[in-house]
Image (tube, rainbow, N blue to C red; front, side, top):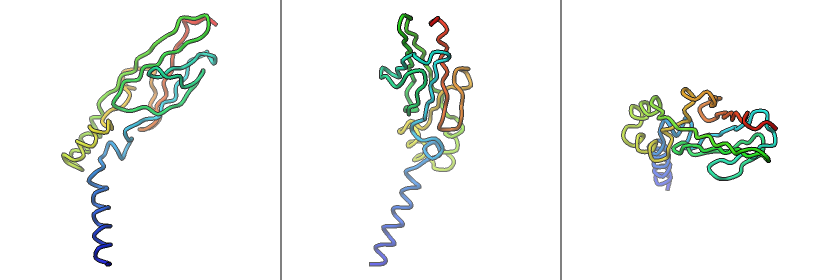
Length: 143
């Protein structure tokens, strides 16, 4: 009985290492986005077509999909901003060295190989590996 229990524990522990990877462990398949519409606390915020808040909103998004933010306010034209993702090269290399082909497959399969492109878009601020802040300039709306 003890041998069976030890075998089950060993399989569970080893499979948890085999089925994770660097990208999954350090960031996960989703990231948290804090979205702020500058100087417009009444602007409605839509992320990928779904309303998520007014003025400011926080939500989790899949890393492997671009983020489409639309803001609307009464008597103003709506504004849409598309935020692209970037490949997480460093985590991918670490996954390859640490976990081999299994780590690469897990990172690519879960989407953990991507992040918001904060280096090429000044409207995205990286707060941590899992948290980002998106700022929307809605100065076209004069209300």
